[in-house]
Image 1 (cartoon, rainbow, N blue to C red):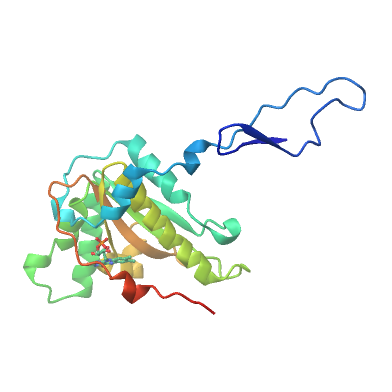
Image 2: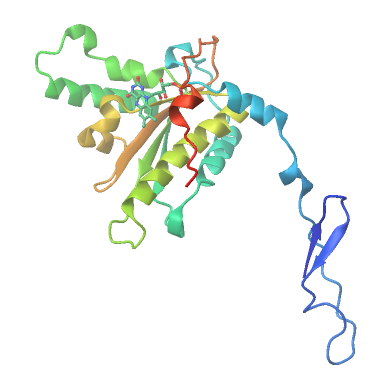
Length: 232
Ligand SMILES: Cc1cc2nc3c(=O)[nH]c(=O)nc-3n(C[C@H](O)[C@H](O)[C@H](O)COP(=O)(O)O)c2cc1C
């Protein structure tokens, strides 16, 4: 039996099959009441304010201080709480932090140099510098199952939702985020250098850190240009 709190805060009783006495006459133990958590019904002004102002912060404005593991785990848990048709978990996260950032960047640079023989020497370490800009990069990896009866499109969208939820989790914890693909995210061979497997695809390199400056917002779409009302 469930007890559901009504709007006055008094419990409503729902379902009564297991309540009362057993057919042997002994009183059944009263089940622990489960109250509808009023928190879920509350307006969350802080959360709304964060959502209202969320914007990407360029990585050049990130503080190099590492993100404590407990906070990073919390963001990742929020990211993993994303809509997922069929519960296939069609995504996973690769965390790159600390010294691994340099290792990843140097591998990218080596592949980039091999791909671009005439590369300007000033660009020989661009990906190392790129990976070192944020204390943590989370590679959101889409891993769809083409054989599943769940459409692949649904699975891909779930990876996008996970990426966005990661950003919202980071935002709630006071961190800035920038979602980029760039060359390492788009090139399968480059992505493989940081553990992306055949059949997987990078949904985003989500760079995270504390911001050191307040970036200007960009122009947001006017609702009138993106919202129509279907009236039949
Ligand atoms: C899947 C995806 C890939 C992106 N890749 C790039 C990229 O490679 N380079 C870039 O400049 N912006 C990229 N962006 C855009 C930025 O993450 C960001 O959304 C944009 O700069 C606008 O900022 P906002 O988050 O404040 O709206 C990408 C966004 C998404 C969703």
